[in-house]
Picture 1: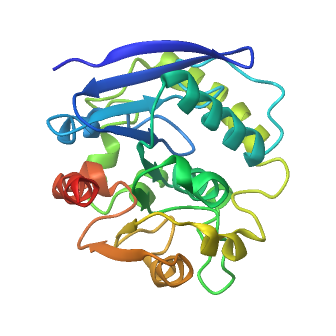
Picture 2: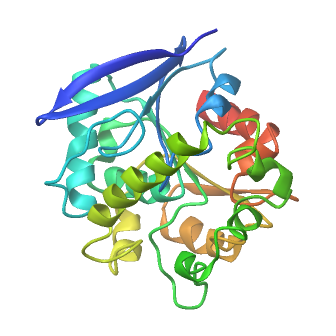
Length: 259
């Protein structure tokens, strides 16, 4: 089964979307980079039609110099849902995409089905701080992304899933600039996000690898407590790239979405 590429003009931004599978629609939002790809979605494709948009300035989507914070991304994605013609798709977000999905559900949850937040960023809880990426050297980063570092190394230069070095460097430069635009106001989160989570009406699954060194799994109970209809799923022995480290993570997500 191959991925299709769909292209839309969203407020003047060329937005590319990968799509695979058949069945109820799932909109899946990636994190602060695209280096780990979207192969994990094959694990849902036998039950769902999975749409995987590249955020503006990431992957195959064009840059969007007007982006000035996460709120612009929320509007962009809500317009994208309309352009795709989706009626209450399920919503899945990983890391920064989890923060994005949580805000989308807080303001427009009635437009979506079930919600999955996979190691979501955004909460910035002082008692459970995220790792400061600026303090991590490039050589150490794979060890913060996966508990089994060999899994993360696949996506870095020399790894089996990594493009040629020039392409890898160009992609990280492009995506780094786009990320700066999203984080320009409050950094990797919003000081009031915790107050907004109670507005989420959707049945929600909060997924976390219990060895996550980037975003601590100790945040998981806070998300579950603040979202009215949420449950937790801890994945043992994996890190931030839980879906890549243990395919059973994707199966569990699919089971939840299937109800």
